[in-house]
Amino acid sequence: MSRTHPTEPAPDPRFPFPHTPGPTRCRRDPALFDLDLGDLSGDTKEAAQQRLEEARRSCSACPAVTACLRWALVNKTLTAENVFAGTTPGQRHALRRRLADRLGPDWVDVLAARDQARHARAEAARHTPLPVSQARIVDLDRELNGPLRLLPQLTAEEQRLNRSRLVAGLKAA
Ligand code: SF4
Image (cartoon, rainbow, N blue to C red; front, side, top):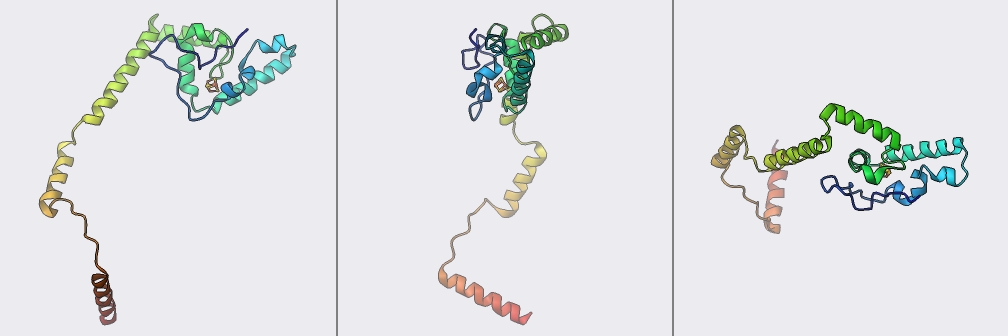
């Protein structure tokens, strides 16, 4: 059996596999995540269980785990076997049924629509002008202090004068 790997193109472009800064454990060690390999290589049930636990530990430490789970749930045909986001095929089947109960039979479309709405809100927030109160504060600051000016670099002579004024002021205090 060949492991279906996240690097393969996902059939649903609305849920691409998440980018990670470095290679995930499943890319470095795909055999660990291959549930059937235990049977093929003569693993005992106990050894296969240990391997599953190790795969789950790796997934729980993976920065992509949440997005990986969504990807695995949505892309059912690509993830019919093996461990993804710490889940077995049976667990993913149960999760899909729960999502269908909660969101309806079109739950994948519902999730995609929610994602789209969230992105639209985030995009709109980036372009929303300052609230009136903040804009007024900015205006007042400009009225009182004028436009922001960068202070010119002092010459060596001006720096020497400033130092001597400071020393004189400290002595007089
Ligand atoms: S959560 Fe697990 S299966 Fe998903 S990318 Fe990370 S290591 Fe791989």
